[in-house]
Length: 391
Image (tube, rainbow, N blue to C red; front, side):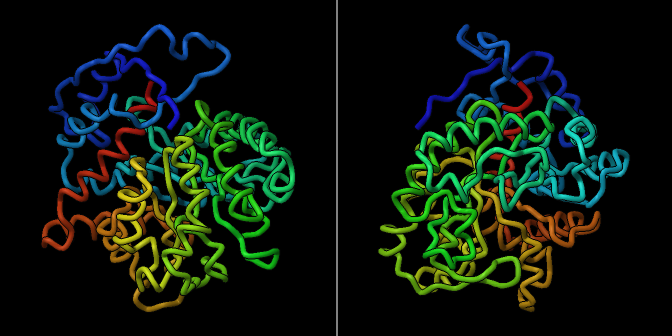
């Protein structure tokens, strides 16, 4: 695992946390400050490295979440989306207390400067900034038109070291836009060139993917938070999960041998987030992985992932056409109960969608359907990353 960066949790930040009205109760008390060693970001004035979610933030995060109401905790685990560049509309949307926002094409103007104004409007309290995510893989999936760095379609055939260089440059563009989370590292292992994920996957097979995934994460390290996706792997399950639930009968033993190594490499390289796909591995669970407690257990207990688990776009479940996934609130509760820490919604999202998800989570805690501790644990993982960004 990579060595985490240590930063100063400044007294001004802690004071701001104590009085934050967007996600914290106004009577919040200051949390303990932690001084950083001299070998911190200050030694490199040319960049501003971001911390990882380490134990450094565990106590402040738990303290902050303890001061939240159930409704505030529920809002904090939602990464929402509305398709606009209007700063006032975006600011009002995030003022409800959402923990994150995903930038889609409709949020991206035609210049980095204009996009920076968009992302600035998403920050309600700089002491607890939201997680601002973007799918900047490069190539086929690219929100930033000015990213002309090599992407997976060529990197999979180039020396592995080229992947680090490309993703370092890409991370710089993402950070300059004001986003702080890149959903850009595709760790899936395709099954040949006809695979839906082939052009986007960093490797053409297990070995090449496992060699390039950690290089991509190393390139992003200290600039943006890295995400490995789409766990447990899109390659074995043919089809497009944007329009259905791809299915495979691949065994768990086959998965461990073929699909797991790139994710393990990403975890060992220090990826802060793991995105869980809407993929059905019938031999493990009839539910899609995003709603499967067993797949989350495997990630935590077998693979040793301790970071933040985030769903792939829950709007994709709505678009599947399956009646059991027609309710965004129910999907949110199921995803949270399964073990996700953050719930991403983009496709078809309106301002009311996130509100419906939050209300459903609150109701599920109230009636015992969702253990309150599960919500608290998720909110704390999200808060650790947000406090790290505030440094």
